Length: 299
Image 1 (tube, rainbow, N blue to C red):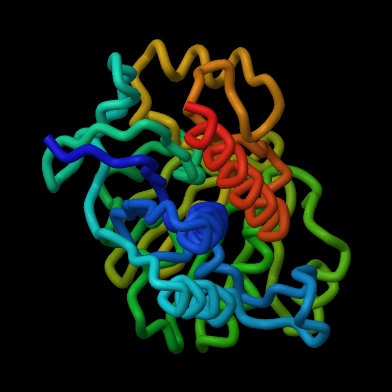
Image 2 (spheres, rainbow, N blue to C red):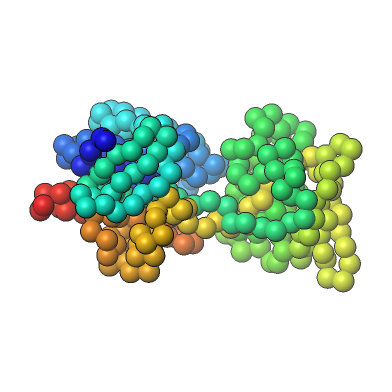
């Protein structure tokens, strides 16, 4: 079984920031990621609140800069899916697609996953006409009618980005949108239609796409589109942790990103609830790395 000093799970902004720090500190971290590095940053249409980019920068471009810096310092991303993490006598046992490894310290930076929304018929069309992640959408969207369900920053940011890709956008929000005012203003300026007060109930296949059936007060509303993108909130992605670690890490944090479990740290969106910002994730990753350095140095 492979033994490591420190393993980072997740190569989003938090995980990559931790890896950059630890690599420079001489600890050669193992950075595991099941998908493309960058996390949700890759889905951000335009990042305007990250210091150093006064004119803003596309999320995907910022993620690429993170990856470039990771490469320059000599750290690398290992592509594999982590299946479980549990505590053992010498640290933590990590099971992944590449086998088992023991790590003395672990930084969990696995981000979030879409919140489950019950809409009749959606499961049957998942991955075909109904999607939960932006990156799951087909690359060619020009002229396609795309319905986005959600009223937060992500839904409106997605709408702006997909409009630029040539899609015809219809935003559906159950209640008054809670997004940034400037995002709302930009969607209005682009002529993106927003339906407010419509609660999705069912989706069914149509001849040329799909029909989203919504409750609108006492009446029913049917909206036609080619595809449906759900942007209805996200929840922490901590399923890789064993039940006992999950309970301890979630219920008894000493102070983020440290937990009561010695050697285990949580960083970024996985613990930040609605405070999901790139700058916060970067800070979490660096602080977690510093705590790991202190922890391993004091052993």
